[in-house]
Image 1 (cartoon, rainbow, N blue to C red):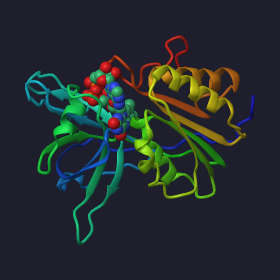
Image 2: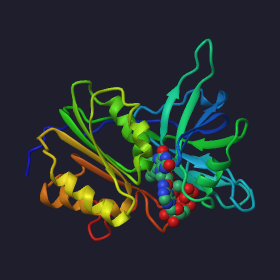
Image 3: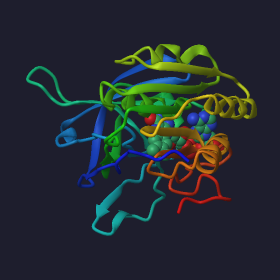
Length: 282
Ligand SMILES: Cc1cc2nc3c(=O)[nH]c(=O)nc-3n(C[C@H](O)[C@H](O)[C@H](O)COP(=O)(O)OP(=O)(O)OC[C@H]3O[C@@H](n4cnc5c(N)ncnc54)[C@H](O)[C@@H]3O)c2cc1C
């Protein structure tokens, strides 16, 4: 087992605020990736300083169009009328505070998959002037101190967070990014990177093959005592990687975070649930 020189990550807490914003722009970045730019006075005080910060986004029921919004109370989110709260997690890809010349803006990048799921249905139809309510982030987990290199692993849903990692890591850190995508239409996205990165793109439409290819790529990487690993994407595909990191390399959660951003066949997966039910995080 490699002895780690990494220090625990600092967490900065933010007040939980509900913000209702207006769509200012809609831009297709790839056939299945859409950037929605939001604006509005409610962005005052917005902060997202950690690479994998996330907001709760509240969507209308895609069939009835009914939107239920929460009130944030001291004991957590509540719905006044007892309606069904439909919320999903998304990454604030970029936040631009207001300047003298333009209002504050927040970009969220949506992966479009099918047409019926609440988040994807909303993003597919989104138009300038539409309203969207978000809550959070509740806190920002800053990159670890003492890091000399990072290995970042992402599928399309985690690409926004991966790009934020690239922006927030120390300038002298060596970064390897392993990106697992169904086709080559995401190449443009990684081209936005603001620093030198060793990119490994796995283009593979088949789920099972994708997981296998990912594990063999990760097995081939070199990890030093101050290498930090962050991996996020479809939960089942990441189980072999997590087992390798935890069981074979002995990396605990201070050295490697593996986060299931969604689970094939399950709506609204809670990413706090164990990624590997056979080996929950202690
Ligand atoms: C911390 C965090 C940050 C996230 N950031 C982003 C982000 O910035 N951008 C982003 O696009 N997603 C992001 N996600 C993932 C997103 O929350 C899920 O994909 C969510 O399930 C989408 O909601 P939905 O209403 O479209 O689908 P759901 O109603 O949740 O699911 C309906 C069906 O679609 C399937 N499904 C869900 N997502 C996908 C997908 N991407 N591809 C194929 N099938 C899918 C489910 O397995 C289910 O069978 C993030 C998740 C977490 C936990």
